[in-house]
Length: 442
Ligand code: PMP
Image (cartoon, rainbow, N blue to C red; front, side):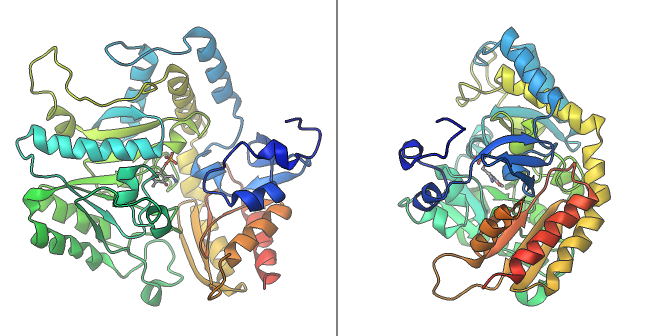
């Protein structure tokens, strides 16, 4: 499709777009053709300020030379090599660097290609871990209402987003859900962690009483839920979940696909909240979103449970053609270097108070019923319109795009998660534009 002319419906027919209102998009396409640092360039030549770091992934901003050059170099040197019974140094080097920045106690990296694959891998590891230790009855998986764990069968089964589940039949058996932690009556407009709701973690005791701890493999939660509309854990909630899982020998998995790599101002949410899970799922910011790559990070205890058998035997029958792909590994190493050289996690922590004040200034904006924030994440909830299939927030997204800012919406909630290189005037631009957009909405 030539970029120098407006696409025809025929140009757009073949690509069945994910999570998209295809028919609407194709009648009014929004095409991005370039990107640099904080901005996208549209096909019409407009600059759009990226308020969402792509899809919560381009934490260092766009088209960073260090990353793009590392990719080009690696592609010319060793384009592909298998990681099954073979190795290449760069994948090992990246694993070591990830572990260097991970919480103490996390010691191993299993590579995947996406957040969804990281989730499937972690769920399978949890079940296989218990089996390896002689507790093969521990197969139940516990997720949470409104959880988002990608789109594969395991992930949508433990996930709790109705729209993502309802089209797809019976899903995985043996799954239970904790309640979500959204308590608008008590916590509306809380800044950072809301005060109320730690006791919602106690629901795990109900599930344990119902099925017996000896049948439960793992609990998976997002430390800060993003895609479901930004839900911040109440004070003490994650600590409680850790205590109850530990008490019952249940593994705790943090899905850090969004929170990993600096978004809360520390490398991982586990460090921010000082709660150590048994596994962490990651993707997105690992390669600045530039090349698909994910990783499951585990404790030594999880890894070592697989290493007891006779040497020379494959310990885990799981993996992907592209696990530890050399080009993705090169992108990962360059990305982590950019994060470190530019102190981007510290920069995120430093601007977070300004961000908090800016997003909460929308409290009095039209239609706004809640504002939630943590690190460089914000959720702005709008009053719904009963009986209307398309949401006011989506209308805001369309208007905001016209006015030069990119935001995301789920249902009635606007989410923002800009690259960690954002400067204060750009925070102001995002929020001022959004306020204008909201004031003009029906
Ligand atoms: N888990 C979480 C918490 C996510 O936010 C996402 C993506 N938004 C995923 C998993 C899935 O990642 P991917 O789209 O790379 O499969």
